[in-house]
Image 1 (cartoon, rainbow, N blue to C red):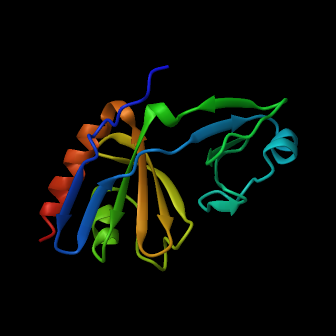
Image 2 (tube, helix red, strand yellow; image 1 turned 90 degrees about the vertical axis):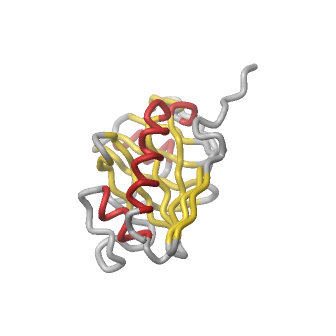
Length: 164
């Protein structure tokens, strides 16, 4: 079996107050079905814009009858499951300037009062669709399409370098 390779070669960037790292090795699955089936089989339907952690999974409700699950695959009978891991890249953004950087590249208010821990937004960075998730400790994960990973990375590095 072929192993997926990192689209960014384990890239890293550090500047004053900001760090960017590729964060590979994750499992992301999209589940779709009726609300009843999703609740029964997947188990969690968080509010839009807020992730929910249960067991070893993180749940993102990204549509009326859809939920993204980060973590081990959940077996279902009445829901469609689509593996997204190999089609996505994940970039970790940390440091005190992380909200400033994210606010400069995406049309979202990333201030802690507006975008707290466990918040997520589906938005775009440089015309590239992304999901941005706020984790504890001022850590943010950006999930973008693998085919646009290098473009997304370059855009973030240029923006971060401009914050100096």
